[in-house]
Length: 434
Image 1: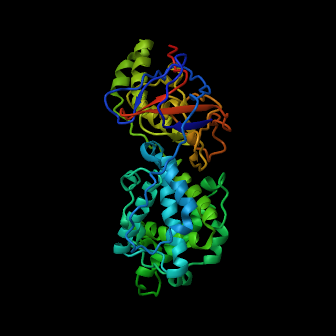
Image 2 (image 1 turned 180 degrees about the horizontal axis):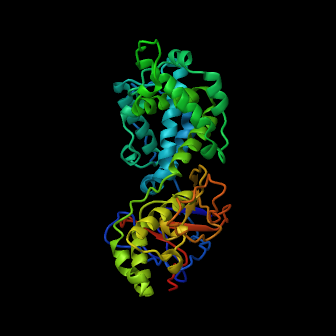
Image 3 (image 1 turned 180 degrees about the vertical axis):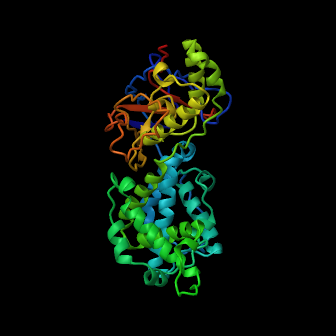
């Protein structure tokens, strides 16, 4: 499924059920019932004719003139980053698309720059100028103006931080660089997250770098156990920049985004509110099914205003919420009872789940910004087992409900309502089937 996000004065057909979704998170809750089986989102034809669409403000940003990074050499990737972090949609695509691409682009910029400077980090002053220039260029192409806050990235992220090695020569003296490049020069996007071939190589290299800050003990040995996690993590950034200096930018991006997805697919990024209201509605052995599902619908509607998720993140969120409910003595499968699906955990109205593999938004002058949704199937949310750990996608002996397959090619369109800061998703509304 592909989302097309257009920004024009547009109206949905009166035949389309629609609901306003307030992106400013005020007291308007989306009119969504997550308790029924989701219906497919049918194509919507936009009004014709459409005026040309542009995401640039046609202004040339005023840069510091002090940054040594070569932004011009990375103009294509910078444009991709601007689209991935496009204005008001950046917070909703932040953890899955925008921030991984934002951070990868910075790593590649510093890595490519090291070919000239022989440095794998920037000093604090230069980092401030470069990050500011980076932001200005992206904003000039339509990106959100708060990306540092959204992605929790600051000037210190461009320095060496606590890692004792920051120059290329020192790196290559301490690290088995040929081994690192053989493990990470190209990664298997499907299997890397479980087999951790490249991840282990990066950890090993980072520990080698971290050892540089420790003096020899009485036996003339350095002990890895003495290395702090903070130093090793800071050195991992240096390792990634070195890798980015040895790979073509497009290949470096594939590696960096693949590794980022391994981390983000392990967690549930949603903020789960207190489950006590659901516990009250579903208590006493779910004596009142309607009350229980109404409580679940209200609870899930809050989750549906937060963020787009990958299919694996939705699995994690379903497991986390289920475990919380079980701690409140709700042992019956309320997901099944109330028809909760994995899509219900993602930003609504559409219930789009993004692929677990890295993806980017795209831009077209006639239709706007679009991104791919992994939405062939309406997968029931699995209720966690009380006696077993949550199912892992890496455990081949554990049966996990089938994840959505390839994109269906169905299209949904978001139209902005000027002056209200809201969006009108057009398509069939989910209905309650209690």
